[in-house]
Image (tube, rainbow, N blue to C red; front, side, top):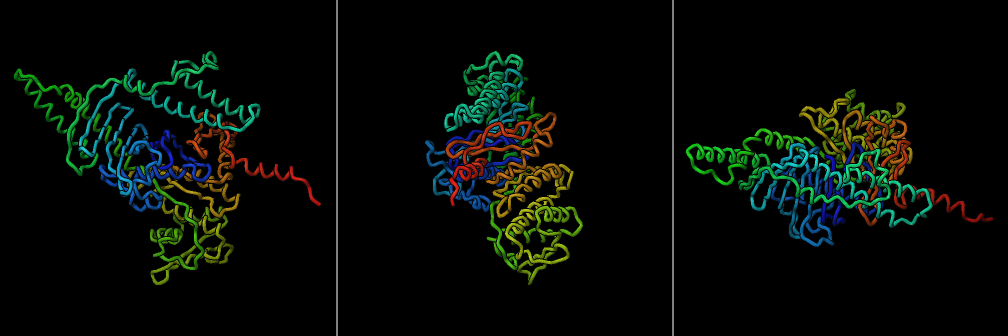
Length: 537
């Protein structure tokens, strides 16, 4: 998974695509749209894994946990048209899904699924409400480079637009360092856009400083693409995406054979003969293209760990579905993970890091509930008697350990599992719950180790400045912004009234732009207020 964007979904009429990295942090005020982004990801995954391409359901459990439930609750209240559209990028595949429905329904009808292989310039267009598929081959001026240029420029334009809005809405003094940094960042993005639009080389970019070129017309770029061939057909209701693609290819090859026989006896072939020829010629490439998409899709997994405050209970009942810790304990011990195994050692290591204890054991009572004991310095303490911070940390550690073990992910294996090559993205909401500041910082260490050693990716919704500060230290000390190193961290800030913007790290770990009010500046503002207050007798 690389990017996500959408229209008319939840609080956003237009949410331009944003890109993810190994560890992506979402920060911002309450009700600023962070959870909306998470819900869009869950919705798309659930749709593709459901197998029903004509209907998108809001009623599955993971979506109920995300509080979507009906189409009316999913659609933006200010939407001018009755549709929701999602944009999704998976490696070199761009995916568009268009849905619509009635407000009270727990499902929506899927009207369009478009999958574009930008590497090979194939487009697969499914229209489930009329059971039609179209396969097209698109050519551009430079073998697909123009299409990529259009995509890159679209993202650049959106970043420039967001930064302009931030500057216009800023209350900073124009002479302040922060305001000047914002303007410098805007100029840098505009220079980069100049290079794309005008073909300016880096050494010549100063020639256009201060100029504001016309925005690149992405729609025009798409129109300029040459349509090499295009074939459409109807398919049987209830078919899977793969079955539909296999059907149109086999049908087209058959029709091509019929037309070819006509030419051999001097008859005129059908008007579609050249299109049939294109499919026959590229049959292997088309099959490989869609197979590549299918494998990427079904080997990409989202694991959703919602913000569930743990409960202090003497026993953790298996049937207590509202107790996230009880369910995590049950799932972990059902896997029969033995002491000394890599997963068990993982749990023990991070128990120590988060000051929970040295090790643990569990007893099950009457097949109904677990008793978990923590051992520290040869002393046994029930987990229920530990502080809420330790209980919350144990919940997160057990959840992550279960993901590792359940899916056969081995440390250092780059996620090569028992079932083949898979990629897992773990979405975590507010992992810092009940943790004091030093242990909140430790969360970043945990995520980075899991990224580097297990190949897992993370999307983390957080209000913790300590988590973010720790990432800055890693960027500086590990020189992540110094080539050829790659920075695993992305941070997006969600303002109250506009879409998110990417912070961007400097070489020294500082951010290229500032957070909005109420995040990093809150502690400083309180300190300044104390310093300015008059001393009292």
